[in-house]
Length: 376
Image (tube, rainbow, N blue to C red):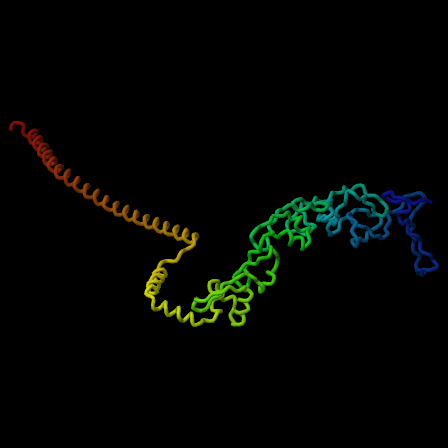
């Protein structure tokens, strides 16, 4: 006997009619009850299947199954997001649970045709991948599947001594090893950095880090005594050693005082000092030196330009103020002059107006008398 239910499904999908209980394993009731048969007559349609089964949602998420009656095949969506991988293969769909176009929706082996599948959203985010080699610049393309193209942004890197600036492509520079980067940044010229213990510049080619062996500087230095009478030529490393022995800080010694006072004064120095004091020209030199000190020191060009601009601004402000004062005084005098002229005009016309008014009144009075007494 074949069974079929509503809606019609294959026989192996439905759970079939509920079988009657086995009388051997059931308690006999005191009263007789009518046993309800699942099918009244062979070949007649069965009642809807009431077996409880687990059903998946439209998005076929794991852990969101619901207990439903077998005959109830209404699709439902869970409260989760879709979570399907987008076409960019980097992000996931953020829509609510929906049927996907690429998947055929089948519940318990039964394909649902009354549910229209919905396409996932399109990714509009910019590319968020980490570029290789590592680069701080973002990828100009939108979110994509393949690897990012090499970075073509130009970056500036100064040489080790700071006299030249190199320009590299970001991808090319970052693909180098650290040693290759150091070599590429070198300008190939002399270092031009001041040595820490003397006034000379580093003679090595442009190099990273500190200057090598600054205490072995072999340049010549003029060494003098305290009175500046005696002088000799020493090597720079000997001068540094002498300064260290005399417990002088090399950083505090200026360039003009470097090497002074290292030679001891002799009797020749005393004789030379006496000659200078007895010589009348020394006094004149001192006077000229005092005059030179009284003169303003030479200023750099940039400072001169700034001061010149400030002086021009001050002079322009003074000119504006003077012009404003002149205009105000002129306006005051013009106002006074116009007032005086108006007063004179009113006085003149008022005086003549009184005479004209008296003459007119006399004429009017004479006409009135003539009209009143015509015989006179």
